[in-house]
Amino acid sequence: MRYISNRVLVFVAVTLLASCSLDINEDPNNPTTASEREILPIAQVGTLEALADYPNNICSSVVQTRVSNRHDNYTLDLSVLTNVWNSELFSGGLNDLETVIKQGSENENWHYVGIAQLLKAYAFSIMVDLWNDIPYSDAFQPDLEVIEYDLGSEVYNDLILLIGDAKANLKGASANSPSTDDVIYEGDLAKWEKMANTLLMKLYLQTRLVDSDAGSKIQGVITEGGFIADIADDFQLKFGSSSSPENRHPLFVIDYVIRLDNRISTYFGNLLYGNNDPRIPFYFFNQTPGEFIGRDAGNPNGLSQFEDQDIRTFHGVYPSGGAYDDGQGGITNANMGLQGAGTFRMMTNAQRLFMEAEAVHTLGVQGSADLRTLFEDGMREAMKKVNELGVGATIADEDIDAYVNMRLASFDQGTDEEKLRLIMMEKYIHQFGNGIEQFNDWRRTGYPDNLELVVEIGTIINRFPYPSTENPPSRPSNNELVFWDN
Image 1 (cartoon, rainbow, N blue to C red):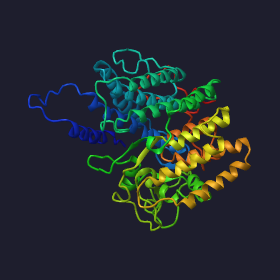
Image 2 (cartoon, rainbow, N blue to C red):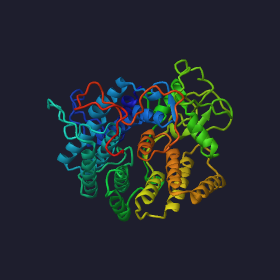
Image 3 (cartoon, rainbow, N blue to C red):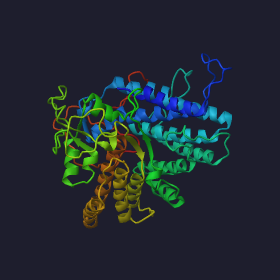
Image 4 (cartoon, rainbow, N blue to C red):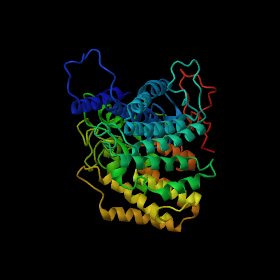
């Protein structure tokens, strides 16, 4: 299912109404080239929502936060994946970002260029994480008869250079600067620079298994500072509650409007209930009052009939913009909770703290705090993200303290490997709603380390298959590894 086109129209309409007036000397049937101010929100939403929808769904299913009849048991819908690759990314948001970069450079709108470069770096890094070798150097050369596929490792190296260029462009003079047309940070260039440094940390950490210099590179980012350090700096895309045009979080539409497809994984439910996690009523909405009804991953029975449609547990207010679970239950509908105004969280302060903790623990870098403090602060920031939702309910301080202290007690008594597991599992729970990052962490660290399928039919997914419309030099099997995963 696609949501991009209508959602982009919402942002474009808002941008144009806020910033443009009609010139009677211009022919509306023959418009001039759109400005960077008009293209940027289209590029941002188109790129990020393409990743937040189907790729995110696949990854979430693999790491068992949810179960879906569309890709349970490692099955993939190649036609939808082809649409994501062709229409939503290379011919959609990524192409629009490239237009902002090219046109903004010509017009000396360097702040627009810098923002577009950072989004390009983020999006292409995710594509490498999912597909490994991808078109990059030739990606926007439509006249070429043969499109070359760059090695994933080489793309990562180019993206790191691109981030450096972007940071320089953010700091330089610019003919024009974005404001509300930037739907991520509303033109706050300082926050974009923090995003840039956090993205560098993430890319270096991602390659720690194959790059002996990863520790020193991460150390450089930590020493320099200027990364995401507060929830106000979080890199995220906020959805709205409009249904015409469609502007709601894709998970909300599936769980509260269409009411098909998704189940919360029993594995994930047992994990949170087993830890008495205070985020449960924010993460899950139980249609059956007080009863979690999930599904075992790989269970082949009854998926297509949706026999549990009116009783099962759905995604809650975090992350889908659905309902907070007050214990009363009820069949989900489009008027519940935040009515779809959820958030796709790409890089958060809690995530950065857990990244630092992993780097300190596995690479011996000197963190911005000691290992135990990074772990504790990561958990507390994760709770803070839930409490910022504004739904009339929050996690009480005493409940946060009880949970954090329980995990710290296990941490203090744990071996080195047990400490790493605790760090990664807390990060896994925090990243509920971003299956892509959970998928990356699972492949790199092996955590969660106890995922099981009731029946295993397909081949485990370590990388995405190429669309049938493409001509890559080879078609590796889905269980082969991307370059940073050994």
